[in-house]
Length: 241
Image (cartoon, rainbow, N blue to C red; front, side):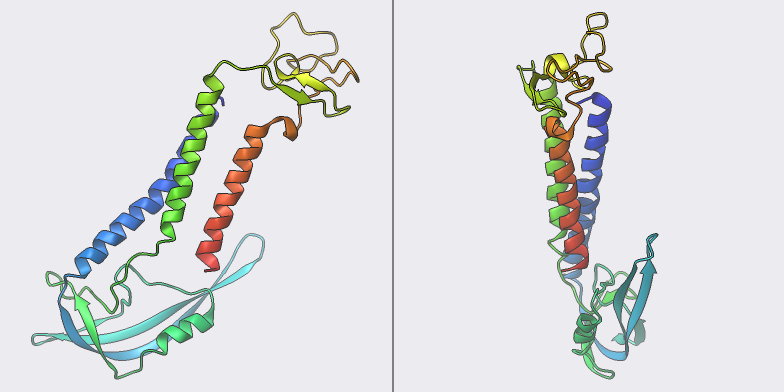
């Protein structure tokens, strides 16, 4: 793998693993702190579901539904108001029925326990739950991507063995070292007449660039499959679970 491409893939893997890892660790520390907070008696003031619509560049419309619960709670002689449900942030649902099912557990006027920060009583929440474990799949995907990048980089530095590909026109079996114009260019001055940009033509059919096809580039295929697989799993976990 060329050095510049290696750094691009490595940077992508670091971003894919680092961002979710930072969010998960920071959320976990926040939850661990919140579990030691005191609790106050609160009361539900209002319940609602906020519908949000977004449209992408292709015109596809998506909908998200945010439960909204306002509550009051007393600390000493002070009555405070809060709207945060989950300590780690406001969660949302892709199905309105799920959001409705969540708020059905609450009703206006219902007494509820409210956890609050003793140093900053205005910061409170109804629920203290661990961050979703699915975030760790993004971290695992990023680490796997980094490992693949390093593996291909190291294998590219090793002494190449005699490898063969298939002519894209006639199917003849050809050695990469002599015929692959993109993988192992032949030194200037020795290429046969009619050769491609850096290799020999096919001796059977005369194809100028016989190995320029995806089936002769397994590394590119593996990276493409890994890329599509990681993002497909991530999008499934984000929007369908």
